Length: 361
Image (cartoon, rainbow, N blue to C red; front, side, top):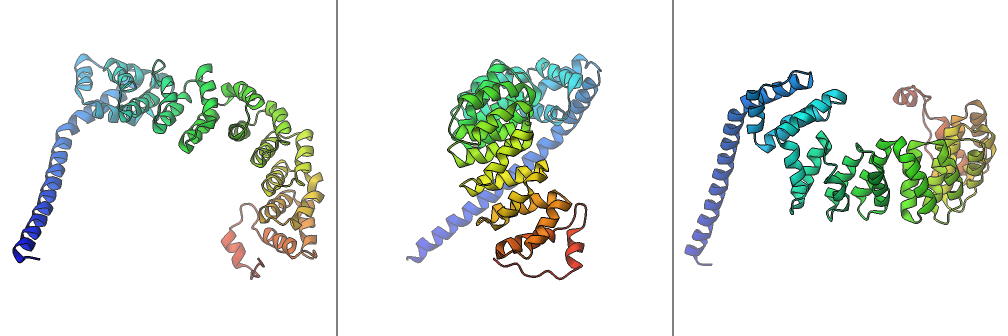
């Protein structure tokens, strides 16, 4: 390569590096200057908000100061309090946000063409409240980030239409949306129970499994009937989640169905049934669980052994008997679970008090 050309290339690269450093230093200086200028205003705004939520009406000058802040600064100041307040204090904060025009601006963002602005608006309204006229439409937004934020907003607005839309989103193709929807339904709790019952009786496919997961978190006794019915579903994941739901509700019918599922063809279902029986403390199933110690699936053997341990003396007796079982996997699993520290015991100290034998795989 020509030496002159090489020098020019090197000089150009050096110039780009110097320019980048100038930009970075300049931006840092500008940011520091901006913080120095805005610091007192932000501190004053924070004091105004703190006094307002305690019941002190801000004067016109204080309101003008709040209204004169940039939207970014307003969001920062209101956001520091919005997530930690409730009741009358939250109402006062929301009223003040409306007076300075922040809520109106957030609603405008929710209708913007750029999805980042729609997301921003939904976040502000989730934090502060309001948005009933614009946020529900974002549950159908083409961007999953916006749909998920709208679903989070819906957790604080238990209107029937929003709950029905949340349920329909259990089949959303995006994991982010499904996770947020399930979290919102769990936070809604009781208002979501009846719609969820209807959904479990009408829906099918993958969304049913998601609905069962939510129902297990709510654990209302009315969910037992759909749980028992879905214990016979053709899909293994649905049967496993139905077993978990039955274990969350409990009762004679539930324990009967769970004991039967210990013989299911799929290991995930057998493991879920064993865990549920252990959670319920249904010691009459101890014999069936002891047989599961010979199951070909490690997860099933582990769930059965832990369930037996949870039964107390009766389960521990069966685990000790399994130490001499003809099946080496049953022996190993029984030994592993019997060696677990008791509740409240330091597992490190417990392990250090004896020599552990290696476990066969």
